[in-house]
Image (cartoon, rainbow, N blue to C red; front, top):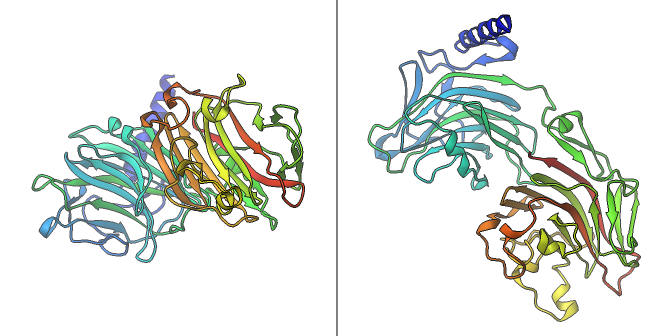
Length: 437
């Protein structure tokens, strides 16, 4: 044990000595800051250029607001795609900063927030709007101290990870179909500006280094010409697993009379004939990210059940249901009026989608849901429909979410319509899940 501790300590000292060295070093790490000059850094080249004042003070790149409380970024001159980045960061309180990745003048990248202000978030993801809120991250930040910050970015859509002082605070893969973000670009450090920071407040960064990741690190699936996806080794390492093998319903059970489903050609088909109300996983899940593709016929009515109980109660209310419905024709065909929380993507009984994102009937849609404790984020075809704390909601129907199951099955609802052409009305494929704990 003593020998191992000595080796570990020597390795740490060697790694520290390489932080200031240009070019590849230990395990591929490359220093980005020489500790004395801003060589290799620029204040232009991204979407958030500004007039913040940057200098080297005490061996750290230090930023302060410019004239008129102006903010701005300082960027690496070299672009990066898939990489790990780390530094020591000091952000005065109250002051707002962040680490930006894949920054370009013509396309959005992503920000890992270091918003050290009352109500600010450490480790949230922001790019012309929040992709991920992270109010708990502030609890890892030490005031009036240097904090170790590490971020990892890979793939497209991006898988974004962040550690503060050795504890992971952010682990989020953007949903499939998310609006296009840059796949390569500069790394930036921020002075936000325009706030109520004390005069002379600063954000400072030292021991800055980067390590490029191998090509394909963030490619979690391959897709064939027919749209069927297969998990890569990288996807498996990231924790993703398939819920449907494309051939049969292994891992699923049909409740009720068991009739109403067919597996073929990589799809789960929901049939008009049959008496089963839902198809459910044989495993239970608690905190996870889920993605699936679906398409529907006219007057289709289905849904995605999450954390539902196995006690025979209504899974829409023992757990959570994300609605899947023919929004385009339902009201006209049934001579009815839908509530806002009955449209596709809604959290049934509680939250309406913020926008309509369902594609025309017969076209494939991609639905991605994150459940992490009480927090629920639903994304349809790359559009964030809501990002809510479910325990803060008052449902119009069903019990309060704090009273619902904390773990349970994932299910697909079957409400077969009548009077349609063909023997199937809904199709599902490419079902993948990644447990978060």
